[in-house]
Each structure stands twice: as C-alpha cells, then as structure tokens.
Amino acid sequence: MLLRYSMNYRIIHSMSLRHLAREIVIQALFSWDFYQKDSSRVDELFSFSLQERDKLHDVDFPKELLEGVIRKVDVLDEIIEKAAPAWPIDRIAPVDRNILRLGIYEMLFSGRGDVPPRVAINEAIELGKSYGGPNSYKFISGVLGSIYEASDLKSKEAEQKKKELDPKNFPLSVKAGAVVYSVDTDGNMQFAFVHDIFGKWTLSKGGIKDGEDPKAGVIREIKDEIGLDVEVLDELGSNEYLANDKEHGKVRKQVHYFLVKSEFTPVKLQEEGGGLTDTKWFTQDEVKELTTYNDIKSIITKGVTKALEIESY
Image 1 (cartoon, one colour):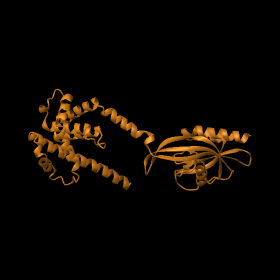
Image 2 (spheres, helix red, strand yellow):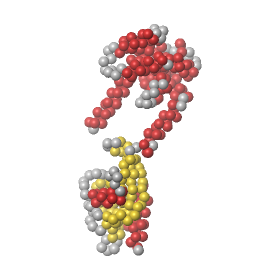
Image 3 (cartoon, rainbow, N blue to C red):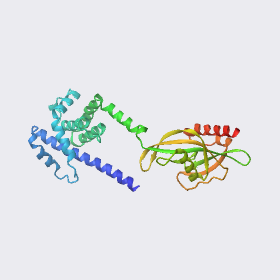
Image 4 (tube, helix red, strand yellow):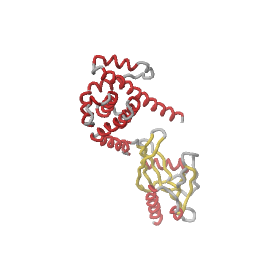
C-alpha cells in the first residue's frame, strides 16, 4: 500500500510540476508577445518567469517549450487562423493566443511521447481557466478540438492505444496444467481438481521454468501442488489469457495442458495460500456438475474423453 501511494504521489507530483512549467511558459510567451516578439529578450523573460518558482528544479522542459513555440510561431498562427477563421490572430486575446500556440506546439511539434495530444488539450484548457477570461477555456477547447479532429492525431492515438492493449506486447508467463485422473480400487475413474479463492474448481497448474520442458514442468508442479506422482499420457492443447501480476502489471499467461495419470491416493494441498483452498477427487458424473472456468471446459471434456478411451482398451 505504501509503495502504491509513493508511486501515485510521484506521478501526481510530476504532473503538477509539468503544469507549473506550462504556467511559466505562458507568462514568458505573454511578455514576449507584449514586447513585439523581441527574441533578444527571450532569456531575460524566461528567467523572470522562473523567479519565485523554486519548486521547479528541471528547467529544460519549459525552456524547450518556450523556444519551440517561438521558433514555430508563424506555423502555429497559420494553424490557428485555419481552425478559427472568424478570429484573426491579432483579435484573439493575448493570453488565449499564446495558450493556443503552446497547446498546438505540444500536440503537433514537441515530439514528446509522454505528452499525448489529449493531455496537451486538457492542460491548455486548464491554463485558459486560470489565466484567460470567463469563456477562454471554451474557445481554446473548441479550437484545439477541431485541430485534433482534423489531423491524424486521433487515428494515431487510437493505433497507439490498440498497440498498448495488444496481448502480444505484454510479458509472457508460461504455465503447464493437467487433467489428472486415476482409477480407484472399485475400478471407477476419478479426476483431481483444485478449488480456488474465487469459488471455482479448476485444473492443477503452475509455472514453467526457463528452458524447462512443459511435460517435465507439469509433473513437478502437480507433485508440488497436490502431492501426486503422475505420468504424462497425452497433450490436450493450450489456452492464453491476460492476468494482473503484482510485480509486472498485466501479463500474458499461456498454459499448456496435458492428460496425466496417477495412483489413486489421497490428494492434499501441499502449501497454504497461493489462491487455492482445497483439492478433491471427483467421479466422471461429478465433474459435469462442477463450477469451473469457461476457457478450460473444452480442455476438461477432451481430457475426460481421452481418459475413458485409454481405460476402455
């Protein structure tokens, strides 16, 4: 909990410093605009805006923004005039004009991957609320919104989000699990399942070590989890799903399933915790009534069917 709080604090603190940096840039741009865009005074105006801002230790970010806006001002003004044709650039309030310049620069030209276009727009709107007139933020929102819609930023942002959510880009965690069966002293087939904290009966499984054969891994994991010595008889297939990991965040879990057989001996969880609460043997008819996960139902059915085929010979 403390670590999560510390991380959240750092993120929020970083965001607030970025906002403070943008305020400094707007003050410097306003002064620069007031002095007829006298570039010889840029350093002086920037230094003046930095006064009494002792919390801002990194001056590279605001200085880069200020110099970038001044360097691109003609292009930025042209974009503003196209997006707001009813408002010639010299009729826009100086504060609003420079907030728009800064917002457009961050959206289109800053090259900072850590400042998505929507963040740049929201930051500009907040600056409009703080430094502009009563309706400045609405005007700024409208102009920047129309530029965002007209550019390819929206599609790029959607593509980036899609890429970030693509399961192939998450770390891979390989596991092995099994449909475990045995034949009791009366000749009845029994299947071993484990019960988890979510109230579901599921298949015994565990992580595979780097370079380890999944067959060897499943033998080891079942022994470690429910205390059975098993023999691998067949492969049942695999499935893949996304899960949250405490250390790595979202991970892609890939599970290889096998049909394994053991002697009919008592099963017992070998370790407390780990998300499991119980383990039991079930007859074929009882297996049909178990509450389990949809993504392994076909694996269970396939395993039971193969086990019946093997034992019928």
